[in-house]
Amino acid sequence: MIDWVQQWVHHHHAVGWMAAAAFGLSVLSLVAGLGVVVALPADFFVRGPARHGFWQSHAVLRVTLLVAKNLLGVAVFLAGFVMALPLVPGPGVLFMLVGLGLVDFPGKRSLERRLLRVPGVLVSVNRLRTRFGKPAILTEERQPRSVVDSGP
Image: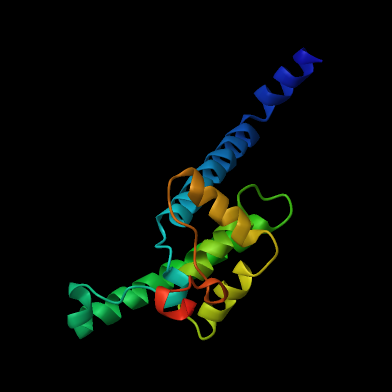
């Protein structure tokens, strides 16, 4: 049996490289996705993304970066779509989600919030953040009560 596997790998070495590349991309995208989840501010879905920086004061630079980010998002989404096809190796669904995260479109914020309401998603995200010493992600439904709101 081992001889057969060795012969198959020897004759189909290109498949081995594709499998290794797919595995590498899977690990890389998993690490990147985990990094994003851990790095998000706890109030990201309550207040939205920060809108500050030197590029915000320069209209040409702001539009250029926005177009570049959206083009990158579309390219990543399309690459993910191709990887999601049967018999094509790679983390297709994850790339599609990353691509959607980069693209700006109407309703994106409500879609992100709905994804957090899927049973188990927010629990899993917060469990991961807890392992890295980060506070739990806040949503509109889970606003912490202030001392003023607590009443007598």
